[in-house]
Length: 240
Image 1 (tube, rainbow, N blue to C red):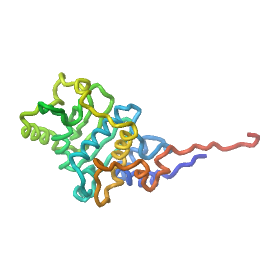
Image 2: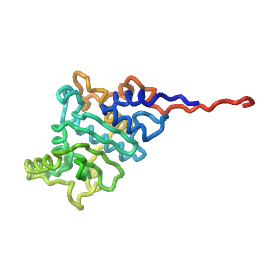
Image 3: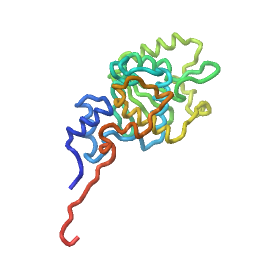
Image 4: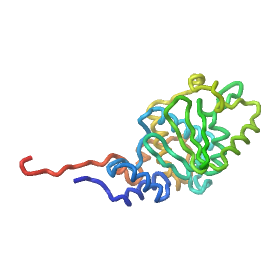
């Protein structure tokens, strides 16, 4: 006997956290077990947690205080997130996609590093862009990123004096490790969790994670019971 909930109920609950469409949320839940959390935490690699923290924290810095209504009820312009244990996929507002190309990809200004150290991208023929860090087991996929190459090229033209650090083998993650300031473990996990549950703030009046990152307890949503692994109970037989 098991304590678990019908698939449709779990799908609807996941959508509250991720902003996914019904079929997308269902497809991801069908991959795993009915006893798994509906929104998994990042792992098992700590690098995945760190990459998600760096992505959302820098995005929050550049977007600043805003109403999700500015992005059609998408907090930070993240229309949906599809979290898996070993990665996550994001569907971004076009304006935020352009911002990621201009501000999240790493550059050397001659005085300091901007963006995420060691970040690179790989674009495929299906308009997907995979952001990853050199020699690190971590990635974030940008779905339906049709204008990505155009935005990257435009960003390069606007910043001719800056050196892009995502397209040459000489630019390694370790070389710029000294420029990275790592917050404590609790804060890193909170950033990652916020990204994976970003739809919780889709109806907020105003948010500013850069100045006030929510606590974990504020990310519980309406179904915290489904964010934990479900118990499996075995029947008891006479004589046990």
